[in-house]
Length: 244
Image 1 (cartoon, one colour):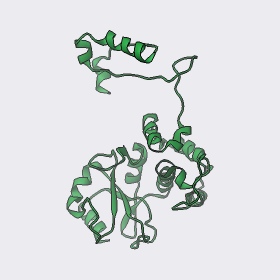
Image 2 (cartoon, one colour; image 1 turned 90 degrees about the vertical axis):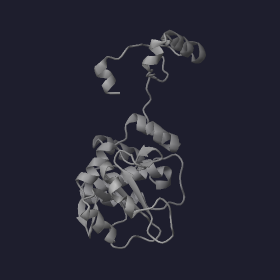
Image 3 (cartoon, helix red, strand yellow; image 1 turned 30 degrees about the vertical axis):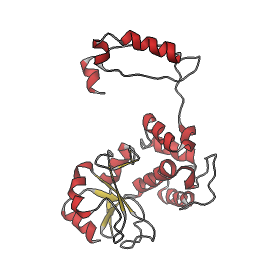
Image 4 (cartoon, one colour; image 1 turned 135 degrees about the horizontal axis):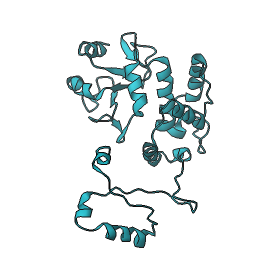
């Protein structure tokens, strides 16, 4: 708890994500998962080490955008709206900042689906796990009832609810999560270029290719090598370039 006192003295904006109900005790075998503002991460460099020295409590730090070594497998830990809500709506509990009830439910639901996958034990995954670390289904059911949230505690039901709250991962992020946990693939919506089917793929090329007069060569390469059908080609204006 002295660690959290120092964070408060330094005005560090953080939130302890899970397993905080029995503070100052942490369940045996659990480490502390903490979400912290990107700009505050450097304020705690002297308080932590990047390895387990066997003497103190293990702690995983995540930043809102995933910068400063604060990502999970090179992906931000939570979707941006959810991450910001967790920090902005945090509450003080037994000397540490923890999520508000609604954001706690959302973060735990997100964690169960996208981080744990079928290992969460949630119904809806084709692959079943016989031994689960935590009973996420029961915990989420109890929390949803306490909060009066009308939700079907299945993988699809949670995903739909997160989308309604603008807490679900964007399509490109979901694609990366599926690479890590293929069992999430059924949550992806397929993109079709036209009635013939097939995936829609967009290539963003650098100006150097245009300057060297290689655009047509690149298009021919895609058509000849990979049998792509080129639907459209456009040059971005200066304003459009700023958003990419």
